[in-house]
Amino acid sequence: GVDTLMRIPPSMLKKHNRRDDAWSAFHGKVYNITPYLAFHPGGERELMRVAGRDGTQLFASTHAWVNADFMLDACLVGFLVPEPSV
Ligand code: HEM
Image (cartoon, protein in one colour):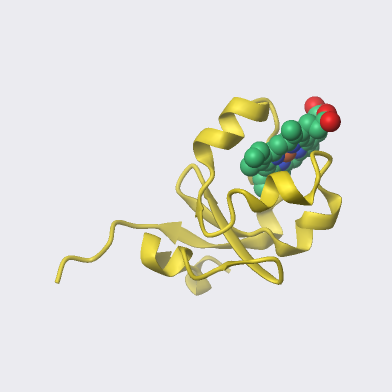
């Protein structure tokens, strides 16, 4: 449920950049894209380009018409937040 979602700064997102542990942010939402990699019509390699980072721009430039929020709803991990200042 929504109460189990995390607040994820870029430094945390960055750590999830491996095939078997890949997160990416789209429009402020962070998704675990690992389960979707094998199903991506554009291929695993293309999708892995956004692993560990904000994929909003690359996503918009490839297929802005695709509803990623709907497709990846079950893979939602949390929300991208600014890096906390020390
Ligand atoms: C194709 C989903 C991220 C590159 C597609 C298609 C879907 C899809 C549904 C088929 C679209 C169609 O035929 O109209 C997703 C989802 C993503 C994602 C849910 C986010 C998790 C990305 C990213 C890139 C990318 C980040 C580029 C770095 C492509 C390319 C195609 C494609 C190049 C065209 C494949 C072809 O027609 O040969 N994607 N995509 N996708 N995607 Fe993605």
